[in-house]
Length: 341
Image (cartoon, rainbow, N blue to C red; front, side, top):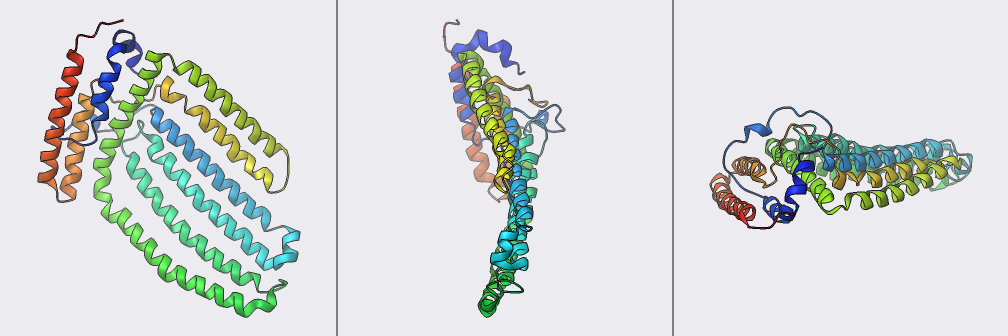
């Protein structure tokens, strides 16, 4: 639970004005914010919790799709339509697609989903994206295998082998050259061009999400909306979870595999409640209601990014101007003679 729990009853009338200062912090630069470096402890903040839950839902979708692929591979009805090789290839293609989707969820969970509990939420996402791009190429390759298999062996479409074989060769060529070239280029950008930027971006995302988590909890406590909204989300999420459990319990081939991601989705809906109620995961960062601590971190890391991009002078001028504006705005907001409740 953040320090907002004690601060809000006394300063709720100034909360909106304080928020203005924080929301203005998209880019700025002063001193090296040493208190924002090092390892974090505890659980992810509310932002990370929601993203992590969404990542878990995506991973569940991927796993379910992969399971459907395994089910397809042993379906007699499809064997009659596509032949044994074709059915197995279809199952393999669907399974590969599921694995690719799963990498997206894993990337979110291990990256931004750990905001507040790790010092490298952006780096985690970048690393995961390379797995996703590689998965795209594998999926296209599996599709080429499927097209070839449909016209082979005991498939009723075997007479079309010259056509399916040519299509398969074409897909493989496109995959190896065009898709492969794009994937190589994208991975190059992710691992080489973006790599120098991940450290300053990590330094931006971590304090920003902690600050937003505190503000969300503060708004929930000050307005009293945390309880009714939380109850509504729990009711909706619970209903979705029950639907997912019913789908799983149906035992219907293929369809039942969709129950798990539906259940996970219900859990994600419930998790959104932490945005207003808080979950205590604020790492080691001491949040500043006026946004000045966040300003220092934002300023420093944006300047770092400007240096990497060769725009150090321009970035320093911009951030110095915005830093002065935000500091003056925060000072004016806190000095206003607003009666306390």
